[in-house]
Length: 250
Image (cartoon, rainbow, N blue to C red):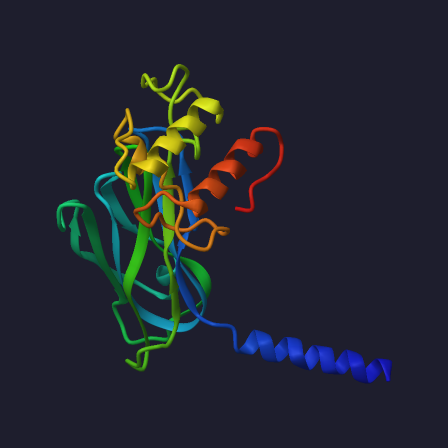
């Protein structure tokens, strides 16, 4: 009976591994940048792929918060052979609020493609303003050496600039730069941002965008949704207690 149970468990595990989903994803999923004016990188990774011959992704980001500075090919596809890599489009001015990247890479010869996990591309950004930016993979393409498109999932990410919850310094409502602490001043700033949607103008209008920390269904942390609500309040509370050694759920 014990042997049968072990064999059953092994069969289930092998079956699960064989059907693991191929995924193109932003890594890290949540990227923290401490202040404005800093350069940082994120990767576009591939997970659990077989015979990858060509890939493409299109990514949107907030040009209010980020300046895209470079896109470079990662090492993953190169391990299968020489490649062609190019950016079909790379601009901070796709529209009034968003930048856009369209990157493509393919092997130069029709040979078996790459297998496994790795980095397809690395993107360098520079932080421009406090707040957060979603990194949305709106289109992705994977093609194998037989010129067949491969099914897969895609996962975006989020960049948070400045310490979450640290909106202002001491003496609010007179604005002072963030002081590295999440305290009563930040709570008052959050309250003003919350009531702004009911027509009560805050003393610091920028705080509305600063206090939009997350989207719906928190936790987990997700891209801000354009409104300051209960999800953001819960996130703020977690930010407050994090400085006392209570780790947030993200």
